[in-house]
Length: 213
Image (cartoon, rainbow, N blue to C red; front, side):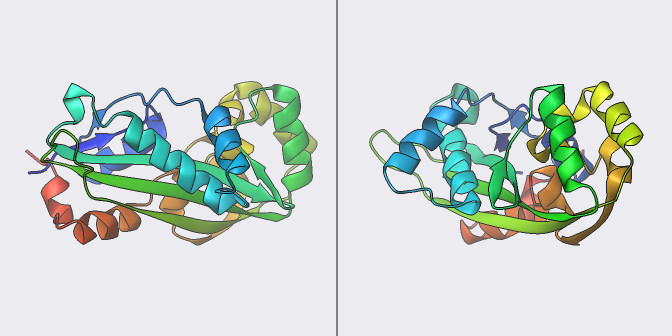
C-alpha cells in the first residue's frame, strides 16, 4: 500500500477519496491563494482559469512536502474554480455574492476547472526535487432554471458560501444542476480518473492507494 497525502481540508475531497477506497492523510496547506495567484499573474504564469487552478494546486502540494506526515507517500494538491461569463469564480463567502451569482447562473452553463498536482514523496532526499506531475480537468455544468425562492433558501443554508462557484454536486446544491458534461468528480474538486493517470505516470499503481482493510 502507498499512502496518499491530501494537501487539503476539504470535506468533499476527503469523502470522495474515502468512497473510492482511499483513506488519505490530510494536511492543511496553509496557502494564501490570493497572494499566490497575484504573484503568478504578475509573472505571466496565469492568463486564464485553467492556469490559475494549476498554479494553486501545485502551490498547495508543495506547501506540505516537508511536513513529517507527508514523507514516504504520494502528495496531491487540488484547486477548483468555475469559469462563468469569462470570469473565474471562487468561493463567494458572502450571502449577497452567492445570491447574485445564482441569479446570473440559473438556466445557463459554466465550466468547472479542477487543478491537480501530484508529488512522489516516497523517497525524500535533501536538496533533491522529487518527481511531480499535474493536470487540469474540466467539466461543463448546466444549471437548472431555479426560482428566486429556491436561491434564497439555498443561500440561507450557508453551503454555497464555502465552495467554488457557489454550488455543490454532492450536497444540497445537487438538485439545482440540470446536467454535467464530463467527469463529475471534477465538479467535486478531485477527479479520481485524473488521480489514477497521474500516479501511474509516476510509477505507482492506483490500486496501491486503496486501504480496504
